[in-house]
Length: 472
Image 1 (cartoon, rainbow, N blue to C red):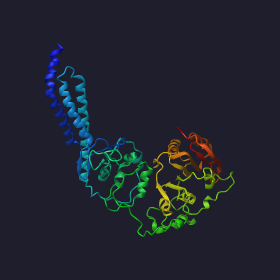
Image 2: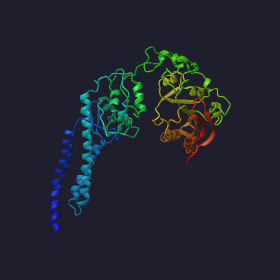
Image 3: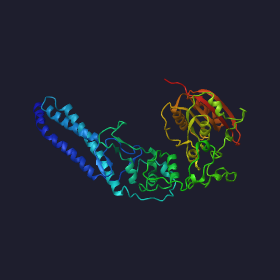
Image 4: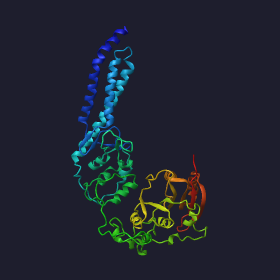
């Protein structure tokens, strides 16, 4: 009874297969035509970056992988038609054919999404993005903390930025081994969509809004990295030639070389005057802008000082410390002192109410504008030393501390030094933090714990120089 049905299926399947294929392809094309132009981005997936048709200067480009899938499908159909004349054609061949149809339909659906993006960005106008008020509001706390699944980015320039950037020769891999480049945006930017839209509201090849302070707030809130922009940054209108390196390390920079618009202080004297204490707009590093070595004249009494001298630390590894990182609220004084000892230090800091990065650069040192949430831009096992002062302390939760310490461990070379300078916390929390440092299994070279006496609270300082072990 089963033989006639098998024979009958073999008769109609070859004729029906082209019809099935056409219906699936036509269905996908219809889906492309009726897709809505309002695109919403998921919090877990900012934008699809694989097998999506990209848009470049108003030209739609099919990805090379889609062409390969079509060619594979054609081959599978040919093989299928041959196998249908055989004895065992139904099971495996039909399953393979169904899988291939599913792949091609999925690719066409993704292409439809990219097509919808293209019409959105075209209607908004690439070169005529409306400018916005430069006095941006802070990111709304409700916007930062809300956990809705999707958020809408309606900036045409943001769509242009996030679109896949194919190589000039379509389908050919570049020296990086990829056919296209995906530009990156921080995951939590989806929680601040309206502020990111405003940040990207500018006219290309025109002057950027003077909004670095808003960009920094977005970075601190987790929207990091920010999207790149195609506008020109403003410069100080009366910028003068910087001082030569032999005098710039310890000389006060010219006021004209700093843009003061977003700082409470409007000149350098305000940053160092005793009369402006409490009114400068920053507090974490109150004496940072006093460009002298006095802050490093450390008492020798180990019972009262939590600090080690630079020479004391360098003697632990004579001739081995050459490059490193200082992750602190700083104007580069540690890096300047190390430079005098032929050690190159990058200073990682934000502009926390004052021009920290500008002053580091004007001293002839290397500023690294980096938020606490960012992965360090160094390769594994490359730095000789990582130093931090007035940054790691009792405000940090244990989870955050663990991620920070392990990233520092990643970039330190074997036998490199981790110098924790004046970590402070409440005395009853000290063991909790010390346990986290001990979990790194570093060798303790220098260690000191002293009471913190500048406040009435029961707090302690501890400083340590630790050596990273060899690991196999």
